[in-house]
Length: 117
Image: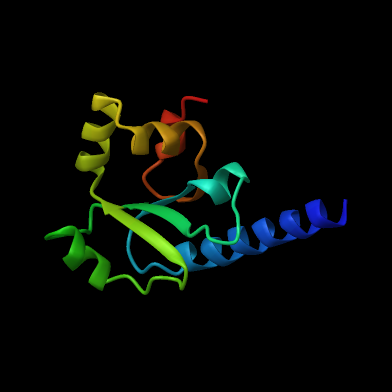
């Protein structure tokens, strides 16, 4: 039980840290935690997968990442709302996971209304 409690505490700490980071973004965005930390099956080698959707993003994904102060140990996927919609329509695994299992940490774009699960 002690191991389970430590894992629960670690996940909670990550959720709080990423939520604080998401709230600090200086533009309109929806931020969804995806991957192993969202599902709760993370391990020592897991990174923190974060989907950031914003109409403010311009240029290539690399250019978009430059405007974000990314948390250590995190992997950020920056998308425009239009790109995210296209992924949803195609049934892309990233969009499906975000809608079905993602943890919405900030939702300026009201994407939680699209949640499927």
